[in-house]
Length: 486
Image (cartoon, rainbow, N blue to C red):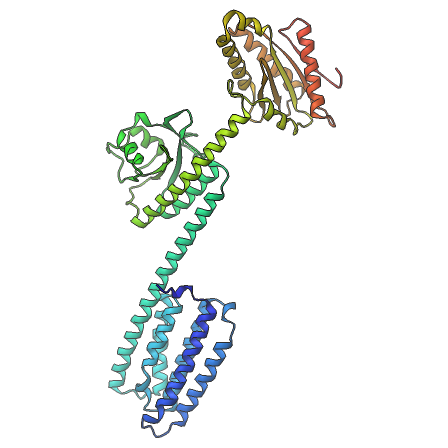
């Protein structure tokens, strides 16, 4: 179908100019057959219309807004009024030109502008008649005006719908391209939530992804609003199975009123804080990957069908991206972490040490006589001791600190801006907590605080020397390197 809305302002401006020139030719060719006593006035108006049409053909309409095209219609009404005034008796012969004007306005303007042209057309008709309007001319003008107005309304409304549809399609295409370009799962979730909620208008929207450890546990990808647990967790196995089965089939589930609905548990509705809810599936290649959940605090109607189809399309595209990103992130995590303890491994910590800053503290830990644990209790017990120490170190770390297993029974902690005082406090707390446990062995530790101008490897070397001194001094103790070479 030909899309008039795709025409440029320049093309529509030239179309208006061509209509002016065509009208002038029609008037000039038909005037001799009207039986009028004085044709000079009509011929002068036809010439003026020809000149104006040529001018409109030459004007740079592409530089201006489309609303400026209404000037052509106003000028056309003025020329019609002038022609009626200069050639009395010709008023009823060119009423069709009013219809052409409304057709052009309908093609180029909004419904509101088409309505504004009605009083303008009446004014042109009255002014052109100079007060002498015959009853039958009024009737003919009224019919012509009504027909032209209806034509203009239909064209303007159709153009408005076309523009709205085109805008929605362009928006969907932009979101689709943005989804493809997104790098992280959180970026994809943010795009998916914002783009889909523009179409359904929910009070809150959450993107849930299945936990990597179990497919029956859903966890939100993005931070939740104040007053809602963060992350928001849903145990699918504790929920009625109807929603899960529908999502597995790729179906959206809308619940108008969650009160008493057996498809959703009261615990979930309390967590979400909703009255109406829409579940949108995010399906992976082989299994359900998660769900987008839209929540309304008051009763809401089911979204219109085109909006549901649009958000389903976006969710399908997002699922492909999310599954790929999840795989990439899993590989990145596996490459950067120790498989036994879940801490950073040596390769990832080496890269992080390059950003070591003055005031950061490097702590090295070594389990005392760890080989004896493996030899007497077995490697499974040794692995348990390693995991216990890793958990102990993580508990002592803040969000910005780093924790790594360098290999065997050697561990490293970097305290961001820990300083000497903070380092002493952390080591004392760790030693006390470890001794209070039942790990069956002790640890030794060495620490060093980075100085201005000192390279990371130099700080590591001082911490390693401190650890060596702790081991040589009888183990189960800590040593802190205060300065260079101490």
